[in-house]
Length: 162
Image 1 (cartoon, rainbow, N blue to C red):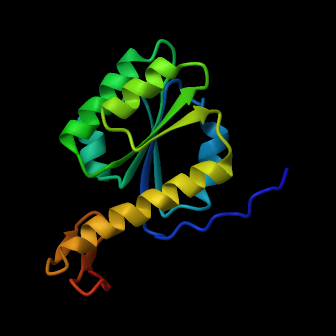
Image 2: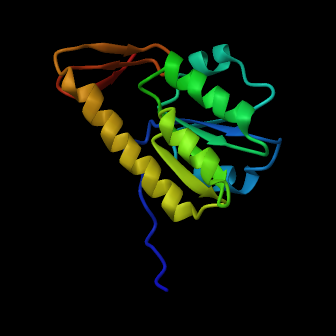
C-alpha cells in the first residue's frame, strides 16, 4: 500500500476547533495538526460553551463523537444551526453507522472513522478550506474585518494587518 504525500493546508490562517469527547483523547492528532494549521484550539465536550465557539470563530470544527454519542451529535447540530458556515468534521467509531447517518442528516461535512489517518484528516481540512474560501469569495465586493486576527480582508482577496 502506498503512503500518501503530506498535504499542505491551503490557508495558513485556518482556525480549527478540536472538541474531544474525553480530555486527551485526541492528543496525538492535535499535536500533529498544531504544526500544520494557523490556529488550533482544543476543548472538551463537557466544558465547551457557545461563547467559546463564538470567540474563536473557527473555520472548521473537528468533533469527536464518543459513546453513546447523542450529546455530541446534539452539540454538532446546535453548532450547525448557530454557525451554518462552519465546516464540520465528525470523528465516529467505524461500527456506528447510525451516528454517521445522523451526522450527515444534521449537516456534517464529513464523518470520518475514528481513529483516522493524519493524511485523510488533512485532506478533508484542505477540501473544506477550499469550499469555505469559495463561499467567502462569492461576495467579492465585501470588506471583512477579522477583529480577533487583527486583519482586514479586501474584496480583491488581499489581507491587510491592522
